Image (tube, rainbow, N blue to C red):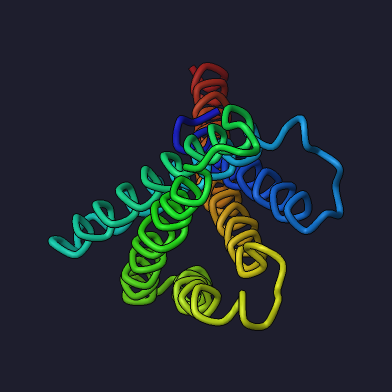
Length: 220
């Protein structure tokens, strides 16, 4: 199989795996899935896989410098802060005593690192990335990235007031990762079609040359 085919399908599998992890995290946070023993795995896995997907799709708009560089810096910084917040959250839930006087301060730092700074920067990177993808003609993927960024800021502003479950807005990120995986898989399939046609053409040419050689030998 051609390298470009393997690459496109591998990227699709990574995107779909990220979607599964993120969906599992959302369901766990909403109480729909009793996965308390896997909370750290889901938090870290969802953030890390989303970062990998983000870097992969950003590499496809490299020619739009310096905006691509700004997008990558915002996205990588944001997700790094999210991971740092998740690490501090682990300390909060698993290492602090219930009566520790620092619990309130640590939780405030967790929220600021992960939600306001980390997710806030990531939402900005999604808006920039969406604009670049739309300019590339990838309207569906770009529009979903833009919508995710805008919805993320709305979630930060109004989710607690409306009493929504944590990270409900990330359901649209799941959709984005699924759609993105489909586009990568189809790209690999489109690469495979011309390659198959080329091989078939070469075989036909080889058969034709063999027939011509046979006819020449018969005449002689």
